[in-house]
Length: 247
Image (cartoon, rainbow, N blue to C red; front, side):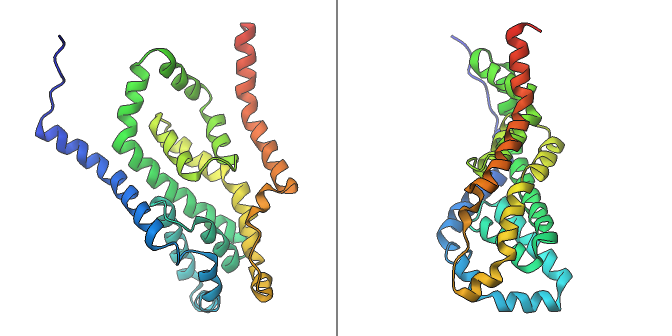
């Protein structure tokens, strides 16, 4: 019979402290989904568009700072409204520099989730995966060997939820700098598409219509993004072929 690992109040308190940021994110996400869904939507943007434009015209630098800060909070706490925030960035600041502000806010918010998850669970889980054997170890080794490609893939593929793409790298021990770079660059295509939609919201509001948020799945948009996905997956395919041929 093996001895059970001993835990002390100090180690339990330390483990709880490490998990507090992750717990806070989960709680904020649940509360936000319930209380904020009626405030962070397209109708709210349409109702407040004139006030937003007036504030931007009077306080441009402050508007930029507040917008990026709000985007960080939305992403960091997984609140509803990330798509509306992206549209707002285009509506207020045009496609450029709106896309830059959107990508900056999204990346910083993603880093916050990544750090919370890694601090709370990721480091210990990565160590366990590294020391384990069998299929689990093979999965982690496969991710480690193709980190750049895998990171870009999960950012480029529209079907991968943004929250999942933030958590998984933290749980498998991806370095922070690599995560930050791949996030910033990988979300640019989608951000530019939705920011450009937001930049055209003036005409949409004038007609009393709603924007086409499914535009990213239209062939002229989706095919180039899939092309980028194939480029990101190419190193993985080459390594697999070399492995089969024993090169």
